[in-house]
Image (tube, rainbow, N blue to C red):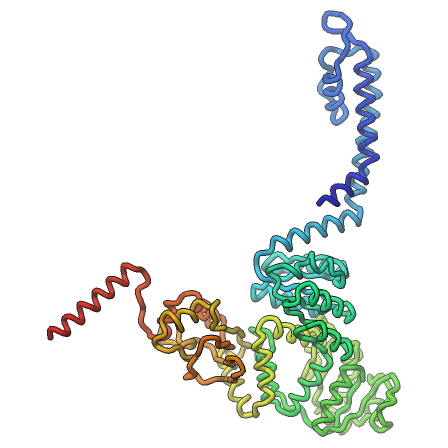
Length: 575
């Protein structure tokens, strides 16, 4: 705020000095020019009356001559003062309007406003660096689950779009370079309520600088970084990044899982999607001959996945590929029939279009389907705004870059146990994955369930009560499935994971006894999530879920219950 004040004073110095001089000359002239009073006697105006008269005359049309009628000399001087003061005020107003349009001042005001808003945050929040497609998607999802966020974005147009976005909470944002450690500090990276930083700008070097700043300024902070190549990923991990997301590697691993274990992929995808989205059906890609149109990093990772599953692959790309044999490569854009036929599209089982431009991908898709209508098509969608075009062409699988990164980010920041569970899915067989995915699909009417975790430690009121204050009956996993408001009904939720130290149980049995320090991962509807939150805060709800009995809460009713119980025991003894 001090910088803004001095900046304004520095820009307004000349206009203000000019106005002061005009006032001083006008007042001095009125004091020096003689006048007459109402009795016709000579009168010399004092400084107070002169300043009073000039003050209302210079800023308005005036209220009359005071304290007496002016002489002709005074009126002539006042006439000159009026024109001088109007000129002075016009100069000042022009300078003020120019100042309001000054970009440096606007930036300083925005910076101060941003700093104040971050300092006033009282809810937990995430610092998001980059508001591209992935950033917009993350902000939307975080807003839906009532999690605050602070955004830093270099481009002004994106920041303006953020200001116009329809969020439930007031977004906090600033247009600036996220690699600047001072700006990161102002944005709340050292704030007590900051839960993590997401470096998802389009420049991996900027993301690396953010990871380094987070490691230095707040080493214990959760940091999620986006990168494009392995060298930068290794560098990010050396600075303590909790999660490094390489979109192309992630796509290749997911596609390989789809080829090798479709039920496991469906379960993995179900738990990775945004809550409330329709659950996708089972997809089984063929494993014959595939044609890949576009051989960048995306195509390279997908080709590796296909080759690992025993498929034959021909690549079409406009750039020469010296690492591919002539029979495995056709140099062309891949949007015309000749290049596709040369790659064997006529007898191919699948087509993968993964150019950096959506129009080329859709053009190749349309041409290929005209030649071979039975193709299994995987399409890369670069821009989310083109979803209507891709929906019209109906590829079997659409891989959206921003959604892939957003899913990875959410898994890393919101429910770390979920990332651990997703890794365990790869170790289980298809029958296990099918059974679990079918149960999850029935929980929320074929919609993606909510995912949440519970830690039974000293910070959890329910855990302290169940294990120390009232350990009978022993707490079991099944008690968290009972409805705490109606014992005859079950909550629509399912335990996915139990972790206690080095002991890990995936999809544990409901009869599993719980111990102090357990970490539990659940999936279910929003009502079940709210019920679990209430059970952790109100111990009588947990007791009701354990016993089915409503215990008195106040001291008076507890004493009354004890008296009634004692009376019943006496009557029973008498009989």
